[in-house]
Amino acid sequence: MGNEAILLRYCRVSLVRLFPVSLAAKGNVRNLSKVVAPEMDCAQAQHVMNEAPTAPQPLSQTGLRGAVVGDTRLSSINGEKGELIYRGINIHDLASSSTFEEVAYLLWFGTLPTKTHLDEFRANLNRHRALPSGLLAILRDLPKNGTPMDALRTAVSALGLFDSSVNDMSRDAQFEKALKLTALVGTILAAYHRISKGLEPVTPDPALDTAANFLYMFTGTVPDAKAVRVLDASLILHADHGMNASTFAAIVTAATLSDMYAAVTSAIGALKGPLHGGANEGVIHNLLEIGDINNVNAWVEKKFAAREKIMGFGHAVYKAYDPRATELKRIAKEVGASAGTTKWVEMTERMEQAVWDSKQLYPNVDLYSASVYYTLGIPTPYFTPVFAISRVAGWCAHCIEQYADNKLLRPRANYVGARGVTYVPVAERSADIVL
Ligand SMILES: CC(C)(COP(=O)(O)OP(=O)(O)OC[C@H]1O[C@@H](n2cnc3c(N)ncnc32)[C@H](O)[C@@H]1OP(=O)(O)O)[C@@H](O)C(=O)NCCC(=O)NCCS
Image (cartoon, rainbow, N blue to C red; front, side):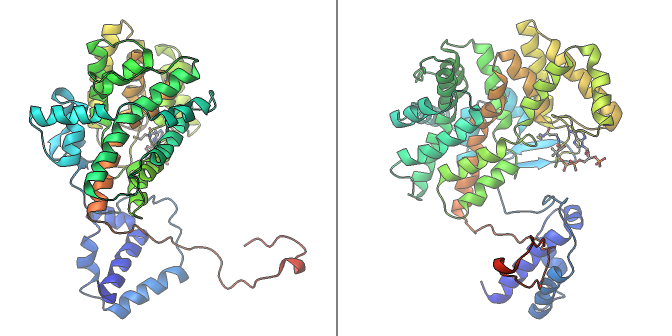
């Protein structure tokens, strides 16, 4: 790429940071090339770049909304219509008729597989399902009172050390790592759960797929088909979601040509936060605190009066009903009815109504997944980790896509700090010099 092209490319990125709102309205960063390039020669573009730091405008609230980081063929969200597609297929069709393994295959290979190919893929995942003994030893040594999300992040990071091809960047090696990571997240969590309860980890059953194997290894008993189907549908719904925060963290790491274990470790760190995957745990804490359906409205009013955020509502992209919440609401009702405990889903529905009445906020994926997992008997600290059992497939797919057409991701920050400050040696400072 010539200097001019590079300059214009940087100039576009800089303008994304300066004018994210107008960009969001245009919907695509590439539109900027049409706006900027015809009117500006290289010197003018350089002038724009040089001007930005001397006229600082705080951008701290923009959060990169509307910025486009690159191309993807994996999934797409239409935030206005409340639509989500994986490789062009509507999420509703996949949630009702597909399986997590088929969705992972679809994301990684861009193909709806024949039964033979899908069976091979399932067997390949199961080939990797057991923990390396060294990793099991690490899990045994971790503090028993830690959070499973931290244990998962540590274990995935350590997993790279047990893979002799960790730095092999060939496509075959990438898919092999994606298989290992996707097969092992559930095994790691189940093993950590049992170890922290003083129980022995359960060896995976090669006849069971991801959802069933997780429930089996977690509880030690073969789960019933309904519970498996519920968890499997939830895994389908969580597998990918455009350029969300954890996926962005993964591809930033992958784009340095670091390995896939490092990328997934970054992603797990980002998923943990309560503004991302951690929200589903917040939802159940809220429901437990409220305690009774008759307390919901007053609780919601109190939260809004205190200007506090309510977990499970709002979204950076959806300005309509999150289609995953539609599916999970249906599943939460079904699972509640068959377990004979509809209390949590009824409270959640009441909360949805109260939040809508006060602030017209839509629920997101985490609102109803909370009562689904709670009714399934999954302990609260495992809600966000269960999200990771599924999203790891999306993270790996995005890493593979990034490696195939890589460009280091290196944005700029809008410097609004001091300039031209004289350095005073420490011996001459009578007090801290605050800049
Ligand atoms: C997800 C989230 C970070 C998206 O944020 P965003 O698009 O940047 O929207 P903002 O945080 O700027 O919120 C816009 C307005 O809606 C309000 N809002 C958004 N989500 C809210 C929530 N969950 N509870 C209460 N108010 C909320 C904000 O307070 C803000 O109001 P204001 O304009 O009066 O200040 C935000 O909705 C949130 O924090 N939700 C709770 C956490 C959650 O459920 N995360 C899971 C996401 S899948």
